[in-house]
Length: 538
Ligand code: FRU
Image (cartoon, rainbow, N blue to C red; front, side, top):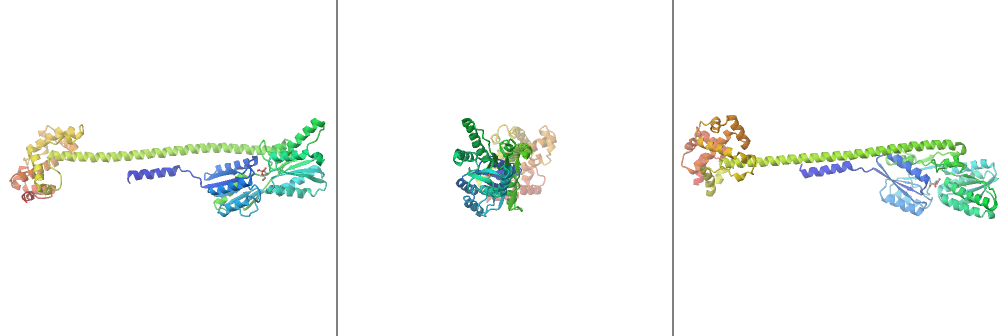
């Protein structure tokens, strides 16, 4: 594989290793932002921590239906795989939910209803039943007689409508209990406070006292309570009148210091009703749908009344749950920190391996290049040494007159290898004096057919082994091979430049048998000695 291809492949692999894209993208469209939604969002996030293939995108409409429609459309445009939605109001949001559903995205509607049937699953507690049980509880508290103020949730939102219905169905069974005021808030403490304050400012007109306030949620009940407290304080200072505060009941029963359970425990509220958030369940359901598992189309969440009797136990239990989830979150944080470190280490290891592999490739390439260069230099030395081109094509060379005379002249005059052929300081340059000496000894004794490597070595004051090692190291050939090459090259030149017969030439260059000279000559030059003459004369 070519090096650049390898590098490309390697980079792609590296990117693949580092890419960490979650598989499922879930959009959560919340109608409001408040502590109830915060609890729920946190539960979803905590649950998502257990999965590394889930990404959550949250949007909150701040009780504005038009805004929620836009947010749903943009979540869908973002390419979410599933939508979890709490519709602000029953009617207005349906068009956006229908669009999401029609585009093939599964939709989980939770806690608030739409007037469309285009959803995949629905999760909620029974708002009608909660309203009804609250009505029953208040009737018991009042001993079947008294005045109630109802402060409703946002107009057009399904929990407000259902809680109202359930509550009235219960109260109508008690003829001496009257709902003397039904005010409208939008689930926030502020709107409940203002509506109650407005109503109280006109009490002289209404001229009646309130025994119980039913807020559709705990924040609403607490807003109404603030307005009543202010009025009691005002009356006490202006008229010295000691008014009694009514009872306040709400719904939500959240854990935590700001939650309804604590408010009941501290007697700020007389009762609340747990309206379960269950973000964990929503996320599990979403994944069941996405992964094609069987799931419940409708989930009814169980809830319970919170009163002064059970508030403390519930509070302690909820605190324990909070502590556990905090511990879990800390563990999760640690784990994700550890995972991040691990993936950083993985990246570093992959990079380091990459660098090592690239270095190895570079070393191998450099080695191959260097070996090629050394071979070229060796060949050049050999050519110069014996003044003969190793080209296997001497007949073509000698067919041109100028080509034929040039190598002969070199041999006859005994031209030395050029010093400039080798880079200064190279091994081969350093070896030139030795090789020159070897060549001189070979040329001087070449005609001696009895000449042995021992004779050559002795002439150079070396042992046979020393000569072999040195010559082999410098030229890559053995002394015997070089001797034969020298004899054949000289024979070639003699054939070109003298009238000697082939036999005379063979003896002159140290071959004891002309037939063997002819064979070696053919092996080296590809032609028999006689052909050299005929080519020249042709
Ligand atoms: C939270 C909330 C709760 C209430 C519910 C009604 O946004 O206002 O307090 O019970 O929504 O949908």
